[in-house]
Image (tube, rainbow, N blue to C red; front, side):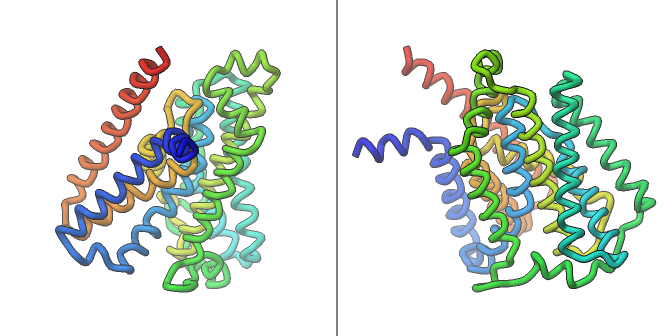
Length: 321
């Protein structure tokens, strides 16, 4: 019993988010029975994939006490780059590999700006967001690149058993790998330490700069992976792709329990946050709720999640006293 109680206490925020998903599912199912269908469940999984992968990477940046506003632009520039390479006759696997490397490089640049130039993460990534988006526009002249070959599209956009696409399994695999990396490795321990108390981590011998750079590289990699998956679905590289996606990723992290000041969060919570947002958006679409109201509801949930974090912190401080 003590072991169960310990697990519950350790994963309290994740369990609260899971309960939120169940309540949203039941709410929409009561209003419209079609919400309970297998096809709709698959739609929720598919809708959560892109945001979920980006949010998983965002978790690493937030864990350091930073943030990455450039993920939507990285997503867009990778889509454009891979589309241009594949339509020019490049091998699909090689194009994908280059696209993922571009994401890592973009993240590394963000990390260098934050650590070596001592820029605030908000300002640094706001600047690179415009740079990356501008490059995507320059390369394409603002015109989408069409005709991405099927040889690339089948990499992710292929159905496996029970109608589940490959990219859903990719999302789950990335979540598991990154979850282990954050919870079970030295880098994960360093991320918690840096986000919790950077000066104490420095005095303990942690290379703060290198930890932060790796966190931003992981964030860039996840944004690039999400872009490469989206390209396989859409079949065209649009330079506007990914606009505003950074906000959804931050929302998923916040709902899942990541503390914006750093030092607290989990990949499981982030995945649940992405699923909750997807379940909510799909439900509102089924009920024909105006898109404008969808923004209001999503924003309200983010505020509630942030407020819950404040209340939880106060309760924990009282218990310690």
